[in-house]
Length: 79
Image (cartoon, rainbow, N blue to C red; front, side, top):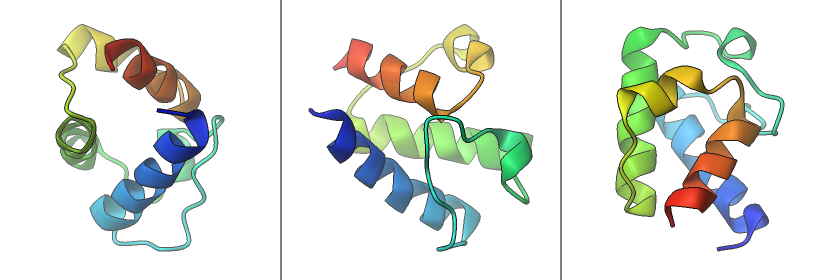
């Protein structure tokens, strides 16, 4: 799957999880950039990403992520 498609899917996931259609998903986006991104919403986000892309992440993998760009790279590696 090409990066543009991954970002398009992630944008929908972010809008759904955070109930905010104004979020613009970029490689540099971090939890600090999104209101209400706490540990619970992070878990919901990870589970939604896993379901949408048919992949599984370990806690250590998701714990190391610094931004959405790293998440996209991890998704690509798992597909």
